[in-house]
Length: 199
Image (cartoon, rainbow, N blue to C red; front, top):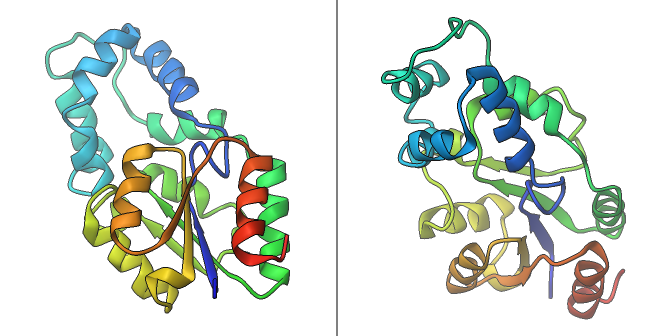
């Protein structure tokens, strides 16, 4: 019997913020997206595990480039603020599941500035919030799925996990959860309905 559902955030509950965030950051730093990708890719896993502060992250990113202005604000938080766009259909689904007695969680690979931004949102409908940067681990590492199962308080087979990454879905399946690859809100509603019979 399914007792809980865990949702990824970016790409599932909200529109994937990666591209608009990149656009904002490249405009601020006045560098190309290709350059930003090269500079940040090795650091993102550390940043998403909370092993780098934003200050240290940008210090490493910009050490070999000339900036036109000093970084004095949270560019990352500015970027998510401009990029945050909730998927109305998905939040409606979350509400329906909650009303039908499901325990609801979020499991997201994300960074401290994003968590700071999200803390100002009304996410009280969610019972469990698991952000990689606060846990020192990230998807698709097995440990974060086991942590999620533990925080939900159920067995793996009693939980549905939804993500838009095939790699993350495979890893969650290996942890024992029912896992659904996100394609669209309608598809997710249909597949959850088949497993739970309540939506």
